[in-house]
Amino acid sequence: MVKTGIGRAHPGIEAKLRTDKFKDDFFALLEEDINELINPYRASFATVNCPCCDRRETSEAFVKGQFSFHACPSCDTLFINPRPTIETLDNFYINSKAIVLFTRELMKNEKARTKYIFDRRAQQVLEFLRSVDMADGRLVEVGCSIGTFLEIIKEQSRFSVEGIDPDEAACRACAGKGITAHKTTLESFKAGSARYDIALNFETIEHIFSPFTFLNKINHLLKMGGYLGFTTPNRHGFDMMVLGRSFKNIHGPCHLNYFNVDTVDRLLERSGFRVVQKLTPGILDVEVVRKQIAAGVAPDVPPFIKYLACDADDRQRSNFQEFLGQNRMSGNMLVFAQKVGKAGE
Image (tube, rainbow, N blue to C red; front, side):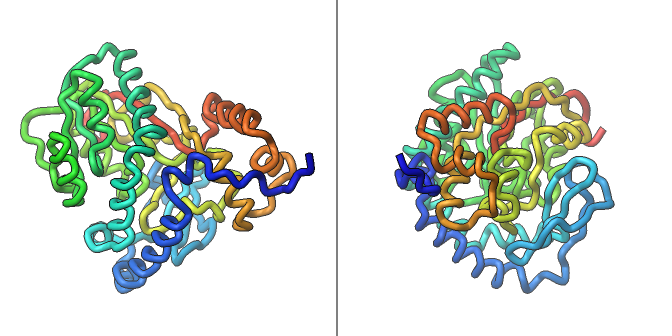
């Protein structure tokens, strides 16, 4: 068989979750949003320390999409610095045309996302909770979007579920599923005297101006000994390590922080948590790299990596993706931690 160097043209899982047209439309609208909602406020951008370990001395790694990305020499966290203020970001998420499109796409592709992401994620969360002898209690998802994950947990467990999300359309979708969703941000949420047994957030912490403040708020919502679970991109994952700054998932102002599975413990420990388990259950690394190479929007990669991504057969690519997950090298990480102290202590 003659190798083409660009792999097969079959759509794969990623196309079922997000089409190329959606991605093109999203980034086109995002550029408009940046010009209208971010650039007028650049004079107020805030310079920050490393969002993971709080180190002050960092250096610019590269500039992409009108934003400067810094790397921490201590923990290798990548982050936008300086960055839009909290007020600017809040206004961006309220008025962004790209975010409206994103929410609409979530609703349209809910079945595919349930099959390839949420069913699997729910089983991982429930398996972890069983491993720590937790079969029921109060569960809250921060950034619950349209409630797909919470609906699965509600159907498959005895947990009482709630969500927090600032998007009105998302909260209406949750209500239609019989799920209580508080239309607010975590920073403004008032839980009262009751505390939760577990708090979850998925693909959220990378969006947050101050992850330390965010985790402190979650700490406050949890009972002592309660659990936190979250997913976020893994800077030490195969896709990001191979594609570098060319990786399409690296963009501002939506993604401000790129932690890694090796040092994210430092942030959690500063916020009163003890890491219990770290996984990288991503399923798209090889496909994402293959598509960017095929589209000519990838850096030069070693022949072996190009072979794995583009010319290996489906079995080989599947085995390699499984290898990445088993060895914590996939581009998406799932972290579970237990509250062992008060916020910031």
